[in-house]
Length: 401
Image (tube, rainbow, N blue to C red; front, top):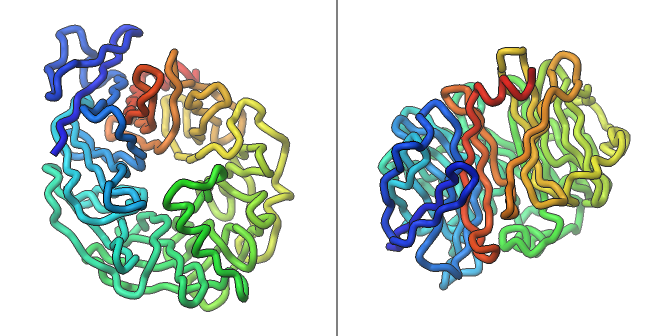
């Protein structure tokens, strides 16, 4: 197994350790309660990673990443363990599945995520303990091509997938033991075989990646962003035979990139029109009828990169409730927009990126009310490597005053 090394950002300078083992932190590093930026390098400079999500454990963090395989066009699974300060502890790249998807969920000290069996294309639920040992390994029969997942309020897993036989998008409730609990499938349109597009999505061949996601509005009421009725749309469902509502996209040229339920039918929305992007800190969606995402478009956010990956989270600060959008800029940085949840006004902006370009993968709220941002940066301007940025709650409070 390869051993990873780490690049530490200290006082504005990037220092890359020349050994293949982790070296201890210097005395002047930040304390556990403060911010850090860590870059995880590898002895194989030609190897690239695709970070997916980060989850906080009882003694640090686990990073889920896709990685190149020599025997498959699909990405393999790479798990990286760090301590509380983000310092590299170990890794596991021996899990024999492909195409891992986010998010990762910590429940009773086990971190759960979905992947795919490379031979059967069936979804697999994987669970690992804080030592990266696999404790859950369950193939979910009848569900192929996993695309996105979410955790419900009852600690069940919501899974969006594609059925290549019936040509449908499937939304399923899965127990922590991998058992199928409930679900429904919805047509992508008669004769619309999109399997090649799904495979291209896994292989990252599309310059405009599909923003698959799913989530829970309230117990028994869910949503997913995927193919439905000839368009890439946001679909609302109570798992009945027909959707309860549809926010219809314009083919794959306009739609939603990220959605965050707020209250009632109000959502924070990040959307797109062709290569333009927009953010709405709060807007009412018709979850029980048909509407068009085109009608939400307020104008382009010119600083954002076309087709940028985007996510939204809720955050509680000393000044009140905030909605935070994370995306990429045209200047190859990660940008966080903080919106006041009550007024909808921009409360602050934070950019991540220095001399090296950064890309965005995931954003989470830490147990100490920090914000964790996962992405990549480039070492020596050539080699893409995983980067984890922790922004302390005190920094955020100062930013949004």
